[in-house]
Length: 298
Image 1 (tube, rainbow, N blue to C red):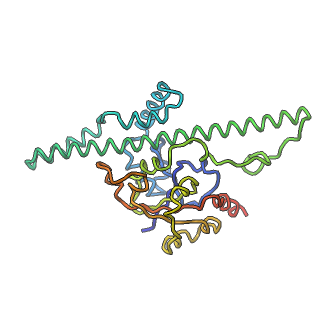
Image 2: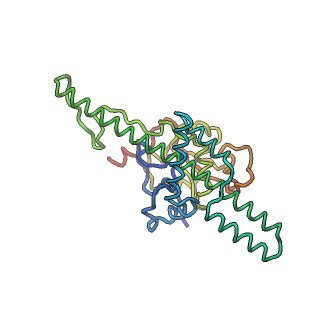
Image 3: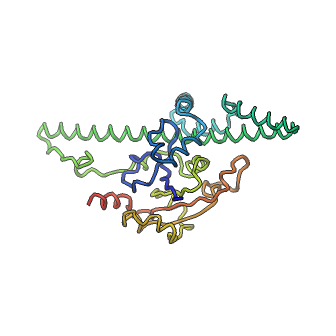
């Protein structure tokens, strides 16, 4: 069985400001219905693992955004704290699951085990829901950043066209991607976003077993620099078909999930953080993703 590669910490390809090999996937937040489940088993598996269905996810996101707007103009960080401290609220689906666990335990004659099973199931689901909520907030932030970037480009084009019409300058030519000539391509990853350790902490419970992570995030590379190693031969084979500009700058680290997420140890109720996670990182400042884009267009 082959390995699946997910890009982190961004959730949308447009936010990267460059291109990646087509087999590299972006993590779904569950906000939208899947369109490629039949084509990609890994993405379908992630969507099935998410506790909130798209309709529930949209409702949860709308509530969090509404609460953030009511609390302050900078409500995102407040929102993370508010949802982390919020008392557990059982969803209808979780209640049915808890009742089934309790019934099984009572049939076996162990009432204490039944209560413990219910508590564990309820607590784990709440943790998973909170993880998905972080993904939903990150998804919303990226979409808003993309919309603002698009509006900014349209404004620049309109401003340049007006200046040309008034005889104050020549109308800039557009490139293949619709950017103005001479405009600096700024990846949206530079926009305010969820800290990368928070993102990893949120997505790890839904990461398929045979999967590794890829990132060109300079903050991640800088934070993990002392731990990074040359790419192992086995993982180099996995990347053999990738553009040379990307392969040449890859480094590797393998850490327990709890360590990668910045925790001091394995927390109770989050068993998924015990697994080792493999991460491929592009060396900071090399521009390898943009280089891979240019190589593919050559």
